[in-house]
Image 1: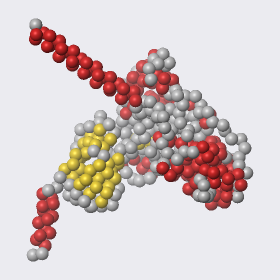
Image 2: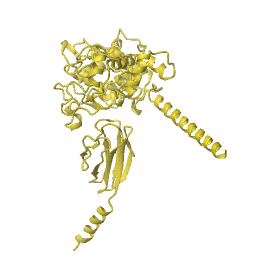
Image 3: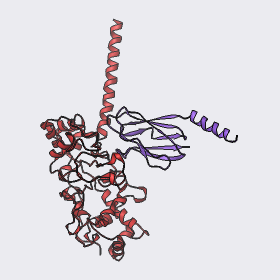
Image 4: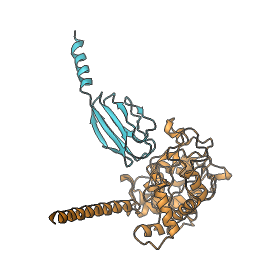
Length: 101
Length: 337
């Protein structure tokens, strides 16, 4: 019985999960900073005319979207509360910070 | 009649707006090619004359190598485009390194150092070649002990980094500071981009257009330093895994850093393996999809751009306009004792 409120919270959390668009444009992540919460998704877009990538090595939120062609959309779910750094493996000048709560 | 006047006014307004927009775009386009006025430096290692002087002595001093025969300048020679004109770096006892010596020019503006980007800063990079067995092969503890017994260096370190002593940290900081001051001087291209259209040939001007347009060279060789610091597998083949050696990330398989093109005509041979002797051959390889276009993880930036021989020659002529005068520095012949 005690688990019911927790279950409700989890379900509500997923129902309220939000998508954040991250565009890769002019060799920059736009926006460069995002405040999100666990369960939210980052939707990576590529508005440049060449390939990009996005990855994070931060524990709990590790991901690597691989080569992303222009026009392609790739979603990544945020799994753990942390401040994570996202880079493009091709263009190390590109940095995105995501505050996950 | 009124309708005709209104139409003319509308047409004129649109014309002015388009002209203004084009002017703004042109200014932005030019701005990215201009040499910056300042050299960036970390907060805890600002550039000072004392640090540059110390770093210069260390950079040129062969006593930093195990057998006292080579210095940083042996592979990164100011007279040879801050490189060495060798396919691969040659260390003490003629030991051959695995890669071509990259130029030190404009490394202050890079956010990753070495061909594979394994160091994030010049301070992180500085001690690597000193200790590498195929380069200077020097034990760091022995070197620090030696420097701490050298009255001349003790005084120079104290002046540059008061009360910090001679440590691996201050040694790296001093060398990094000197390296940071090695920046490109004004080249004919810099005068051209600021408006002097006569200073470079028509062929070079055409080459710049192809470079930034049809050939897509500027997709990677971008900005004033003609490198955006990106990592690519340009399909040269070979066994060197490049950035993939640091971490097995798929995008890094056989990937190497995009080199600067500043002073590029001075620092042949080219590419990480030093396998190409001329700029024409290097341009042809990049613009035709590489040597092994069907290899694993070949960069999507490397494609056959269908260039004519004249277009390739023009790109080469343009790249030659990126060479400035040799940076004016007094090379030490005597070292602290």
